Amino acid sequence: MTIPRSHPRYQSLVQREKIVEGIKNGIVALQGLIAHGRGEAFDYILGEKSHRFALEAEKAAVATMLLAKHPVISVNGNSAVLAGKELCELSKIVNAKVEVNIFHFSYERIQKIKSFLEKFGCEVLAACDAELAGLESSRRIVDSRGILIADVVLVPLEDGDRCEILKKHGKKVIAIDLNPLSRTARMADITIVDNIVRAVPNMINFARELKNFDRSELEEIVRSFDNRKVLAEAVKAIKEYLEEVASKFKIDQKF
Ligand code: PTJ
Image: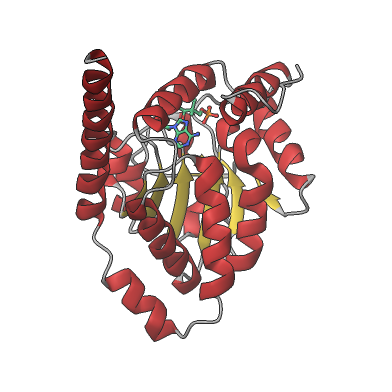
């Protein structure tokens, strides 16, 4: 479908089309439609912009990845179609591995996501030759060269069952999740409350800048980061945005 650039909801409609296209070619799970709708709703009440708390988390996330020994970017169906190209670009700058890991598991979809990502010129792990102990869902199926041995894992658009287990395995978890109330958002070490389509380009910009920093400077960025403050600010931002909209409605009513 061609979306006119002049449409007031152009960006949002483009994202929807990518998800729908992803369903048609077997990359996105049907449940991905529901997940996307939830994300859209949260983006709407966050004012569809990258807030200061999101930028802070994006910067700390990049610093953490640059400091890591084995950083891995975990990619599922929705993340692949919405930001696959950018995730591959980020992986190259911070020297992270890209691994396909999905909740609604099938080998066929694993292969489709892998081939889709490889078009952007990155190496993609998807051997499914190891398991994360303690996890029952299909997300336990990992690559022995990737998530299994990772010390830092970026998990965009996660469904909430894995974050805790990754942490039990001693890994640092960075989540990208528009819902600051989700289990993943609350469990992660760093939570990026931002739309993946804005978050990853922001992270690429930070990565280009921070790549030249000393380890001590990167460590300082990570040390001064406070995830609980970020989550609190995200919830406050939603409240303030809704109050502002409500007060505008009240002013309009007077005329
Ligand atoms: O490809 P699979 O099988 O691994 O399945 C992927 C989905 C996303 C379907 C699966 O992980 C799932 O069901 O996720 P949930 O439980 O719906 O959680 C996804 C979270 O991502 C929700 O909290 C959404 O608010 C959030 N989200 C959705 N779209 C975006 C988003 N966060 C950032 N950017 C988005 N565009």
